[in-house]
Image (cartoon, rainbow, N blue to C red; front, side, top):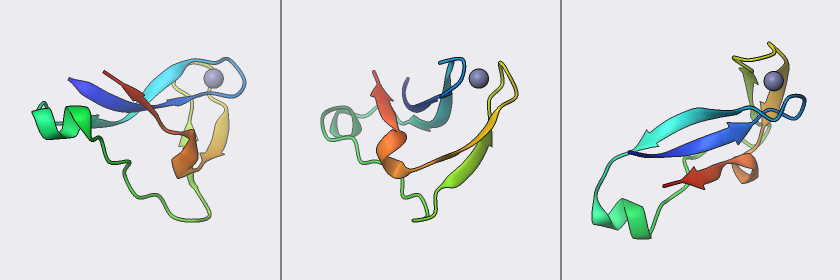
Length: 62
Ligand SMILES: [Zn+2]
């Protein structure tokens, strides 16, 4: 299943923000999830570093 990922700025570990349903439409025209303008805070599952992420930080993983 495709997903949106964040990468930790410290250890570069990638972790999943959300899964994308396996439909052709979402595969070819993936729409980024809406994140609040101020960003959203996540804790890295690898190193525990908390960082704020913006919508632009999301990367598509097929
Ligand atoms: Zn990390």
